[in-house]
Amino acid sequence: MASSLKIVLRKKKNNDGTYPLALRVTVNRKTTYIYLGHNLKESDWDAVNQKVKKSYPNAVRLNHFILQKKTEISDNLLTVKSQTKEVVLSTVRKTMAPTTEASFFEQATLFIDNMHKAGKYNRVKTDQTRINHFRDFLKGKDIPFSEITVPLLNRYQAFLKGSRGISERTIVNHLLIIRTIYNQAIKGGLVDNKAYPFGKGKIAIKFPESVKIGLSPEEVKIIEELDLSENDYFHHARNIWLFSFYFAGVRISDVLRMKWSDLQNDRLYYAMGKNLKAGSLKVPEKALRIINQYRMDEKKNDLIFPELKVLNDLNDTYNVQRKISYAVKRLNKALLHVAKQANITKPLTMHISRHTFGNISGEKIPVQMLQKLYRHSSVITTIGYQANFINKTADDALEAVIGS
Image 1: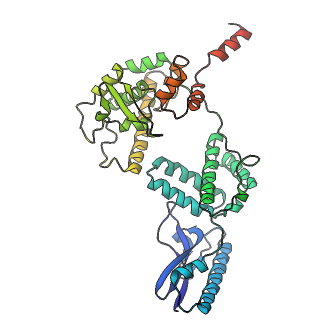
Image 2: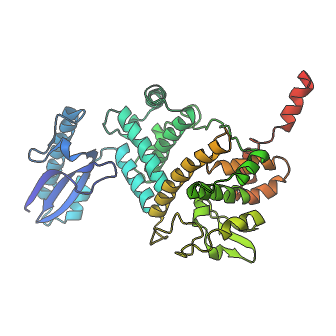
Image 3: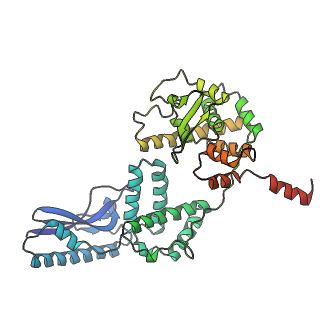
């Protein structure tokens, strides 16, 4: 049985620019790879000598690990040779597979790849940044899941707050991605959950409450009546914002996907992209006046608004989400100018249209109807969201004590 062993970087690049480190086993001119749970940049790898360069953090420790694994697998290969007359490559791989624990960043790469394949552009972008922050905290080295402990995560939170200046809510998002990847490894049978660092008495994932501020009816009226004739794009951004508001703060990603065929019998039919809940609403006269401004535009992909008309394939979810992300940034920048011209000091963004509807609706609409308008899956979500805008009881209680 002719055989050889060589440590190599596989040529399938990860999203972070690194390559998986693997041991290449060749038996009778057939090859298999055994991954070692580490990822490196090409600039940190000495392919001739099969070792990590000194430029890599903890190079000495990783080189020792590589040598140890190569020796271990070489010994296993000799054992297989002595015990088996005819060697099948799959048997060799099963026999020699290393027993090292799965590494966090190897699983993180798989997680990001799955998000990419699912077309979740925003998740890929934000989660990769959070994963990179964890890597920076660890000074570039990989880590087995068993070493992700409560004390380590407490130090990581302090690092994010002190060195990065990250808010409490964003810190929770950073912990959440670690927990998600940890759970992925547990479900895949790669990690024992005995050392799981999350849950009661450990690291608890709890989002701090955020302040949601919407515009008043008077401020909406100012925006509606503002003369923006000298700038077509500011006028367009105002149209998109108002259109969203007129349909109970429908998300901008859904607005930009809307098609002429969604308009039937004076109603707008659409399924919300976030949870796929479908429904229809009567088109308000104010919204109809906005739609009519786009009837003479290019009828590409049946889209009402122009932002996604540059795409040839609306089924390419990843590129659609990427284009929406770029469009939202541009629209929000235009809304800054709209707010300035309207003398509105509150933040004016596409998402604020949803808060504005919540603020103005207040206690005027039954919560069950608001759930339907918001397309929430649970009425509890609606109650929690609307609580941000119902202040009358608290205001009356305060006035009862201090007087008017």
